[in-house]
Amino acid sequence: MAETLSRVVRPAQGVLFVHSAPRALCPHVEWAAGRALGTAVNFDWTDQPVYRGLMRAEFHWEGDAGSGARIASALRGWEQLRYEVSEDPTPGADGARWMHTPELGVYFAQTDVAGNTVIGEDRIRYAMEVAGADPVELQRELRLALGQAWDDELEPFRHASDFAPVVWLHQVG
Image (cartoon, rainbow, N blue to C red; front, side, top):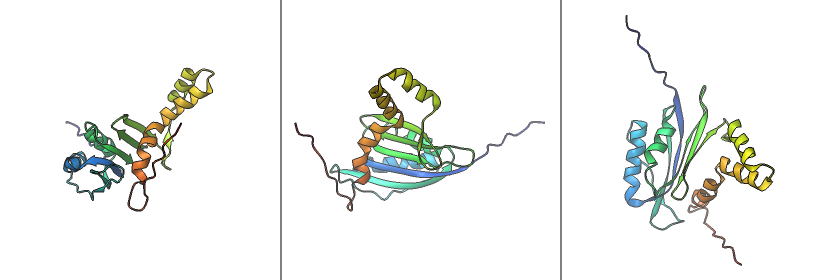
């Protein structure tokens, strides 16, 4: 008698923030996210004020655990996109966050129930080993582990809206 193995499906939810996408790419982004979720989706696109001609969207999704990874993977090949995908933790599964910028590529981190980035013991030990006794190098390694460069690059796009004008500061001298 053959046994049937059933797959346990855990519901999950999260958010896809498309911080910037060329207008012509918007329907393709929707198609890719929908395919990753197994259902058609439509985003409410608005202009991205940081760069003229680019669009932005926020989409709250529901799906099986692991859907965040499928969405991030589906969008990975498009270098022009700036996006973030989050998947909230569920009983028996950690949360996760993916960030992508054209300059830096993809960053992934596990998250806890409060949304904090969780850095594993091995990554911290690696940072300490690489840094040795140099505190500046340790800080650089820990900032890398936390995804600080991705946060820094995405921050103007996160806050750019009709209600939060972008103020660019330029270093002089």
